[in-house]
Length: 325
Ligand code: 2P0
Image 1 (cartoon, helix red, strand yellow):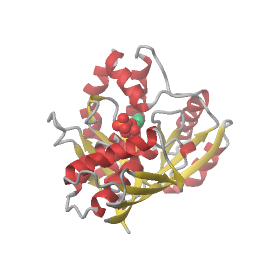
Image 2 (cartoon, rainbow, N blue to C red):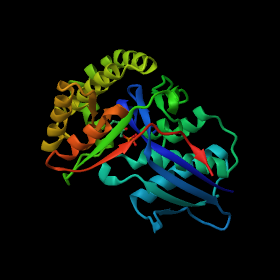
Image 3 (tube, rainbow, N blue to C red):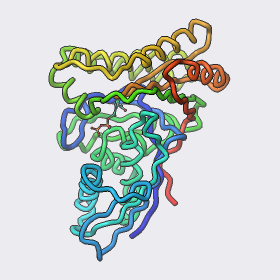
Image 4 (cartoon, rainbow, N blue to C red):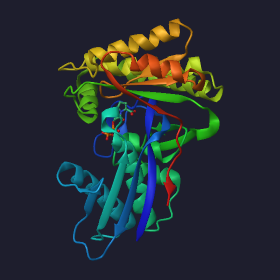
């Protein structure tokens, strides 16, 4: 009745942006990500007949409120799946995902929780089923079941049965690196959940975003298989800008970018003008992630650290999928 699992976070190269079903967390478009080794969550779930509710500790702190409710609601889903009503659990998580790095710890968090909970119950489920369950905690988390390059297939069914992630290429397929550029920004942000909802409902640019995804996906998968770094980077960087363009058309309009965000974007482009292949991508926040190749690690790191307003640069490699202890 007890198990421990570790899951890494992931960075989307083709973004998940918009839901067709809010409660089942079904996306409007396929997305594609790289799992990262530097950022992860480790979670132990212990089911116990003596408990009359779930208990959740994050980094040894008892969690109450919204964060607890999300976790407990997710365990309720697992209880329903396993047909074990009223069997509650103690959940202990540790996060190696610095919130300041602008990575959603929800991706590694829900992937580790789903894996530990299903293992603790000794449920014999395959990876697509685990991914499908994880998706209902947080969309991007369903991609963290696997290492390396991963695609989340949006599916077509209303019940979400065909919406889960699949493996594109393993962790050791290609040594692509990612620098997480941390900015000294404490800007209030629109949550990704609220941001994508507003964009779907109000942005006239949203249909263009959805229409463009199949082309981006076909091209980036070919680039990944061919290990064509420039091609992969160009598509990822353009896809990120298309996602962010939709937010400017929303009502009310919003952007996740800060002045330093733009400076980092321009610096990455000027690195390329000097012959150093580096490409940026940005999620629902001001921080920037930079894709680069191992031979350029030092120049990329130093250049990014020299930008005024950048407080830290955290380097990562391709990471592995779920592991159990
Ligand atoms: C992504 N993002 O593909 C995109 C790019 C943000 C921008 O997935 O509502 O925390 O829990 O499904 O997964 C962030 O959204 O949202 C996200 P929910 P999630 O990584």
